[in-house]
Amino acid sequence: MSRLPHSDDRPPRRFHLDKPNGKLMGVSAGMADYFDVDVTIIRIGWVLGTLLGLGSLILIYIMIGLIAD
Image: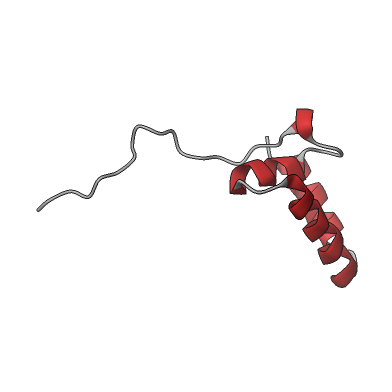
């Protein structure tokens, strides 16, 4: 049975807070780094989600900021 090629030479990607590039707790900057997108898109998503979700994303944001490294 042949093995499929794996990229084992790369370390696994992990989520981390990006405090030096972050504005508040580094959650958005860390998410942008993890998903390889612009941080502005992540921040707009947080704002829209908070406004449309009646503020529930504020609690999720704070929890991520406190739980993540």
